Amino acid sequence: GVLLSRSCQVGGKTVLGSGTTVGEGTIIRRSVIGRNCQIGPDCVIDGAYLWDGVVVEAGCRINSSIIADRTRIKAHTAV
Image (cartoon, rainbow, N blue to C red; front, side, top):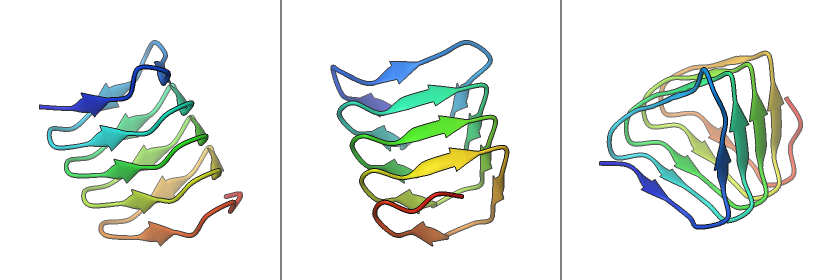
């Protein structure tokens, strides 16, 4: 299954893969998130495709991007 924090927001047109976790305060809209991804707290992901095993650390902003398998996005990065 998927593990969502209480304060995260997952908007319409979004798909989350199995084994994915989403941190506190994170907002995901119009995106496809692969399996076994770890999305940290206070991130905004909009119009993105994250393939399997991606790690997004705290405070990242990802817009209109494709992120390949097993990529790590360091904290407070904008893509």
